[in-house]
Length: 594
Image (cartoon, rainbow, N blue to C red; front, side, top):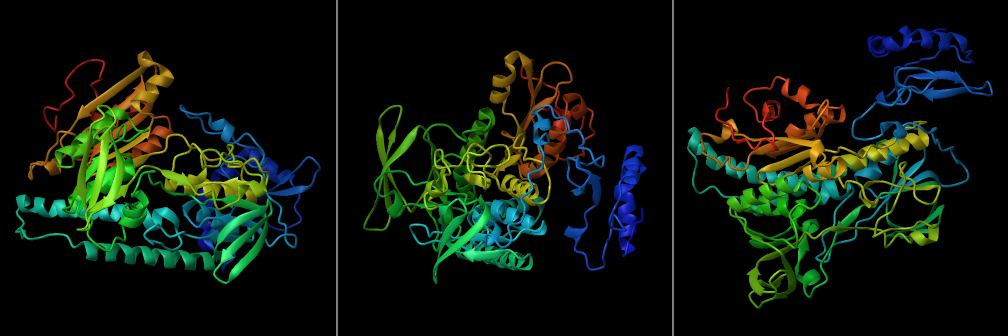
């Protein structure tokens, strides 16, 4: 056996990362027993790109023929020529993620136009397309954005970049900065009381950033040799699509298709909803101040928009049909709502809109009804923002031509993101019953491409996904809600450790700490595995991200409370949890340093 390291810069990296592989007795035996037609196992060329530096080994199959295997695949880490045991996890059967053989697609060069066509230029689609190209596939990405009823449209990148996570976080930050400016006076800064936000300037700054990301994304696709096709696609059959382009229709064939079209906001079926209302697709590029705004819907999108609008000096009201933050821990959801109410954001509970009409002065008259009492009411607003859910974009795809079935405007897939048609897959927000989150879509897209073209067999783990609601007082969580933990393990099998806390930075400006709260939902006996972590307070996403890795690794209450916290931080409050709900003791802290 000989090793050729053409670039000495990689020698140290190779030794550090793979020393354990070559010191394994079984591995060494396996290597020595193999016969190679090439003179070297590893070759690092000076012009290799980082994505090409992959450790490969040759292993014999049952017919005695050599087969190239990517040992960086998680299923093979720890041994060459044999699949390693899947990591154990207390909340899910991780073994099922690894217990099947890789389903590598063979190149169809000469038979179809492309090996893979990805439909959708959002987070999932782009991640899948780029990963597939890196693994040798010929890939095209088909992308088209239908304008909203008021004409809003955007570039490549999908919801997250253009009308979702990114502009939302930027406007949330603008809101927090406005709050911080006024708090600065308490810290000794001389602050002009006339400071106020400029909506037009804020929108311009946000849109300039988004356009820069659009441009970088297009360049990245070009550099990675992904053909970007700006057109609306529909299936002719399972291997053929027609793309409607500005220049006319174009027929495209591919061995494999990945549907990653995502979703768009719904409009309620009431008079005036489409004509006079807007959605989050429009808000971040709105060419006028939103003013007094009715936000219809109390999911995370509705609450986040209401939160930053209030922080920017406008007057939002949240209309709630049933419950706040459906799908989240309901104790935490009500604390979020109460913290917003404390900041002056009113909630119309158990209320649904009946109609929207535009008055002569340009104001919008909204009539509504309380679903419990039957009482009707009305009020005028400058803007009506619909945040009543999202629908999957399946209607233009003509999926029936390809034989793909749908369910509630989504696509059902198996654990390998495969639809009911063998060569058609789906990832991202379009699939039914999975978290509609950008990081989920990105990882699922990458893993799918690796399975199709990289010889991997790792499947996406959709359990224990951390998320954050960027309300003024942020809420982040990972794992099970208290309700779900009780459903799965029974009330007697669950222990909830909880506590209120006081962020140090809140003291001097005398900010309310009334709703700063966290809890750990855990197993009651044994090792007391942690089922879920919930945190309401500043920089919630930054706090929970690290704990998410710990929870997925089998975090226990004993480990948590024996971890030394970083002081003074809010994250350390998790390490100070000692009071359970079952005990009935007061979870309010007496001091911060003892």
